[in-house]
Structure formats: C-alpha cells, structure tokens
Amino acid sequence: MADPKFYLMTDSPCDFSQQMVDDANIGMLHFTYTEAGKEDGGFHGVDDLFVSRSAHEFYEAIRHGATPMTSQPSQMEFERAFRERADADLPTVYLAFDSGISGCYEGACTALARVKEELGRPDLPIHIVDCKIGSTSQYLFIVEAIRQRDKGLTAEEMVKWAEEARYFVQTIFMVDDLDALHRGGRVSKSVAVVGGALDVKPLLTFDLDGALSVIGVTRGRKKGMKKMASFYEKTHNTDMFSSVVAIGNADCPRDAERLADMIHKTDETAITMISTIGPTIGCHVGPGMISCCFWGPDRRKGASVSDRIARNVRNQ
Image (cartoon, rainbow, N blue to C red; front, side, top):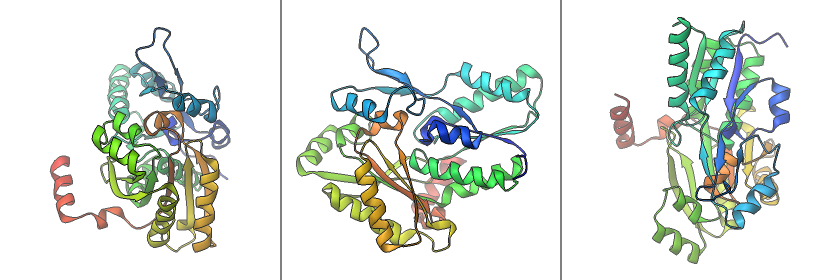
C-alpha cells in the first residue's frame, strides 16, 4: 500500500474500537456525556470507544436509571485538532457525524473558519464532510472510506466520494425501549407508554438530511429482527462490494449474532461486521438497540416527490 495522500479524521459516534483507530491510522474527535442534576456529576465520561469503561458497564448504568446526555467536541477541541493538522504536511478530510441529529458538523465548520482566519490561510487544505448518518451506518461508511484512502484517493477525491457514497448506505435499526426515544424528543410520552405496554418496537432509519425517520413498527423483538433481515434481502445490491453488512448492538451481542445468522441464510456471500453502539448514541437509544446497515441503491431516487421538493426548499 502506498502512503496515503491525505489524513482521515472522524468522530466517536462512528462506533469504532480503539484498536481499529490505531490500525487504520485515523484521527478521532471525542464526544462526552454526563448526567445532569447530580451533585457529584453523576454518570459522566468521554466517549473514548469503551477504553475506560466497558460497554456492559455503560449500559448497565442506564438499565439502573442513569439518564446521561451527550455533548459534541468543544470549539477549543475542534480548533486544537485543526491547528495540529495545519502544521502537518498532508491535507485532511474530516468525515463528521450527522448534522440531522447533532450540531457537530456546524461546530466543526465554525471552528475551521476561525482557524483559517487566525492563521491567514483561507486555502488551508482541511475539508469537512457531513456524513448525514451515524453509529453503525457511519461505521460502515468509514470502513469503506479507509479502503478508498488506501487505494490512493486524494483529499479532493475523497470529499467527492463521501458526498455521493453517503446516499448509498442503507440503515434500519430497532430500539428496545421507546422511553429512550421519548427522552430524545423523537416520540411523545403517550406513544412511549402505549408502545411499551403493547411491546411495539419501532423500526427507524436516516432520511436524506440525516434526521431519524420511522419506517415501520413490529410486535416483539424477534419479529423486528426478521423484518431487518428481510429489509437487507430486498434492498442490498448483489455485487461483492454491497454484500458487506454492519450489525451494531447496544450490549446485546447474542441478538447481533442471531441477526447475522438470519442474513447469512438469505445471502451466503454476506460479510458481516459486528460493532458495539458507543456511548454517544447509547445515551439516546438505551441498551438493546440493534441495527443493520449495508450498501444498496441511491436513496435519493427512492424519495417521494414531496420529500424531494421539501429537501430542495430546505437547501435553498
């Protein structure tokens, strides 16, 4: 492999392990989490990819009542990272967490503009791309971005690749407890109460702007996993590249293995990668979330006419 032509960065919601970060030689910006309203700070920490606290310890705390909230990297942290890259020999591409559910991308852009002005370098070769996806989807996306970097893409080519490729990532995920989505403002309290009583599991995805969208519901976890496997079977492309599947789990590894088995029964060529949902996403979805992400058709072509019009209006 030739030396890379640029430095690749991302952030902790991508659910990588620290070993993956080290092996791929990429930069990582870290979110933090804390439980408000506790005199001692409560349940808090840095999303350090489960280095200082295991996934089970993290999710057990939530099972026992912890309700942490997350914070994106500070302006100081963004600026420090960009100044370090300004002194380096290589251009930088930062693939940032979904702007549809976080202010991370906008915060990074603001910090970069300030660093460029401070250094008097408006053409500083640091590029920021909004992934418009997160967690397991971002994991799948970054794994492929690393592969493309290693194949020799330049920084400018990576930006163009990422701005297109993000729309070919297919996502479906299921949370175990609707209360988690209620706390995040995604469903009303009444829906959460009724859904819990009826054992209703929502199936969600990312829309084209990166916001969460409910694409179905199911009664019971097992049926939900079957629908996720069916979604893969019906939606993934049939070429070798598109047979890669990322399965994420929030402290439910056995279910991740079961979902992988379901997918292999319908597609023997599927290559499954199982990841752990990190603290940044875990704070909002709670234990038991399971996700299935893979490469498929261009999602822009499947959007309704109404959605396309609304998106164009928002982007004007």
